[in-house]
Length: 242
Image (cartoon, rainbow, N blue to C red; front, side):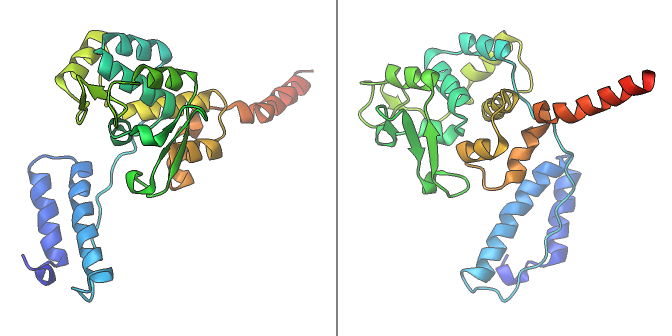
């Protein structure tokens, strides 16, 4: 279809057709988001359209954050083949997204400063990310030295392009872990940080999130800063009982 023939009713027909296939609202929204991005660019950047039709997104249920306790994470790492185990452990240590781990170059790592960095064009939010390397991350990085002149993580000397492989799903099954995606390693990293007292503003910077709302998804995992207020009620109850 020509761009200027795509109307609100056309988009509604697309929505209805996808729902009739039995897909979820979230799946429909991902399709609509791509269409919306193209139409907006046709207006704002390419000057191909004077205006774009309004696209109504469907409601999506708020999902709980899927993360692993440390015992389950260790069980998963033990079941993964070495090259995937190293990458998964590095993700748990740094919170980096899949593409940033598979595409990590030695030129992005400074072992002396115990740091790595993600360039803006590699980051989802298009902002550079400074990545502090803790002892676990350093140990994993050092294991990869000498394997490839450019890429940090490789398999038999070749760059790794895909991680959600049969080996990944087989390891999940052997470890007895269900409903867990590779991206949930990042959720696990963030959840562990919050549970151990890392402030949300620091987590946002380390994770490269564009907005604080993205980080507040993890706020419910800690209540330490609220404990003094909870204690106030306890003292009040004690006075009433007396």
